[in-house]
Image 1 (tube, helix red, strand yellow):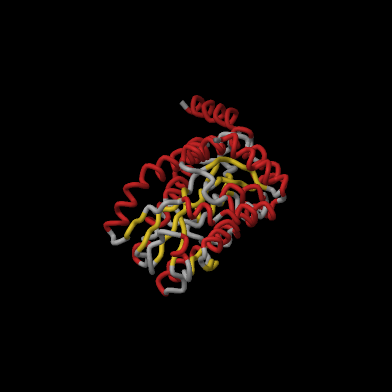
Image 2: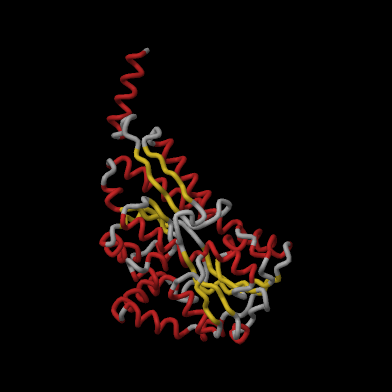
Amino acid sequence: MKRVLLLALMASVALYGFAADKVVELKFGHYLVETHPAHLAAVAFAEAVAARTGGAIKVTIFPNSKLGSSQEMVEQTTLGALDLVIPTEPAIAKYANKFNLVGAPFAFPDYAATDKFFAGDFLKWANADLEKAGLKYLARWEYGFRTYTTSKRQINTPADFKGLKIRTPPDFVNQETVKALGGMAQTIAFAELPMALKQGVVDGQENPIATIFSNKMWETQKYLSMLNYTYNSTHLLMNKARFDGLSASQAQILVEEGKKAGLAMQKSVRDMESAQIEELKKNGMEVAYPNTAPFKAAATPVYDALKAQVGEAVFKAYMDLLDKSK
């Protein structure tokens, strides 16, 4: 029996390249609360990786901005202080500015359009920039279409933005869109947002429904305007040197389980959205579905600002990719 067990262990090590005395510990940081689908996906990812590697890879998760803001955690990952992170496109843009273009206002009508876009050549086009920054792309996860909430009034037309202080992350498109629509963009760290809303430091904010729901924003926000003005994915990134130091089988498992977790998160976010909106209503939020045409027209200057930021050649290449996906 002992000989059988020994042979089985040797076969496992030969197959996967794992040794019991060499556990790889990976730190995975993100900025979302433990009830958010992203955290649940991260937990599922960690558990699947541990199971498939027989415990040879241990992923420890640090949620809820425990290691800093999304932007700070991306920087930590480029430096190797953090191994895994799931930022949205704007937080990646410092290292690969092509990602900023994904959030161009009203670029995508629905989730099917985003899926078709990411199934195209965008990630291949942007990947060289990521690797130059020391980042390895593992998988697309999800975040959702961002929309606005306020405590003061419903947003039905661009004129309703006038005088409103809207919290945004320190992200170019989000800030420029608020300004273009006539509001005042206020940059506040995500971890500080609940208190800022409670104290009235800002009148409103913008996020996907899953984030609005999981952070119980009905406690401070009365009005929800379903504009879906920009789309974000989260993307599972890893420190490239750390990834390259893994065995081929370990690396393959991380990529495979990253993709599985991402697909599960996509389904969760999208399937739950309607039910979450109904729960927001039950908790006192008033929900409006404005005509987006006037907002889209008002946001046109954001495209000009993006073109100036990335350069005309990069902007044109992106728009060509976007057109192909349509």
